Amino acid sequence: MHKYLFETKVGDLHEFLVYLFTFTANLKVMNKDAFFKLSYGLYILSSHDGGHFNGHISNTVFQVTADHPRLAVAAHRDNLTTEFILRSKVFSVSVLEQDVDLEFLGPWGFKSGREINKFEKAKYKIGKSGAPIVLDKTIAWYECEIEQYFEVGTHIIFIGKVIDFDIVHADKKPLTYAYYRDVIKGISPEHSPTYLGKPEELKNAADSVAFVPGGKNMQKYRCTICGFVYDPLEGDPPAGIPPGTAFEDIPDNWTCPVCGVTKADFVPLD
Image 1 (cartoon, one colour):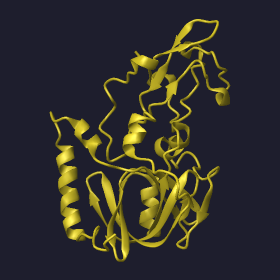
Image 2 (cartoon, helix red, strand yellow):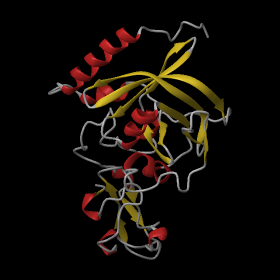
Image 3 (spheres, helix red, strand yellow):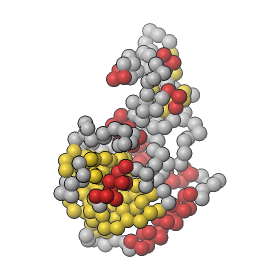
Image 4 (cartoon, helix red, strand yellow):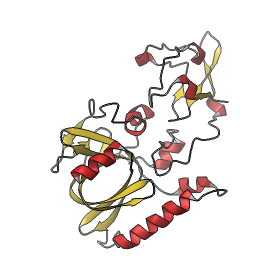
């Protein structure tokens, strides 16, 4: 790869991103689905604050220079990981493999590090800068030191100089945002740059009913926050909900295993 292929001036990048975010904020009658045609990957962006670690799913990571390699990442100003990056001036990026599910992605994308310790059960290592590097479901990773950053609307763009990197699984495919939406059936978290509000409809007519052997046909339900589908045929055994349990029979204090919301945030698949 030519060493100048990805090079650009940070000033030009700043002007472009300001324009892009301003344009997006002013959308009214345009077809917002156009933004889902942009190509993204899905990554875990992590940082630290002393002995505390946090990370979240990011779809806005890209290389901006090749010699020396630099990455640009975007993070919502209210995210805990953003606070850690601002304090420590370092971050890591873990490139996720395609073979993941919503149960794995849920804590990283839909739950806050202010409420749970995302690294409690995660496989990770500490990088040269002290930043945690997630290794679970990871095919490659990068560790960066902040050179500069700037605010763009609801987000902060960080430009990081790569100080270390490695490949974990060279034979596995990276997870793309298109695969996440079309195959995994995931939804953008609220603080994602691609979040465009809750979908008006969450329907999948071909798979809306669970056929329970020897019993009645039971409706499947989908979480409007993260896209998780409750299938009565499978139940939710980790939460004490056995297979064959209709959604209506689930206790009211049950929560989505991916994002933690209640039954009130589920809708039937029609």
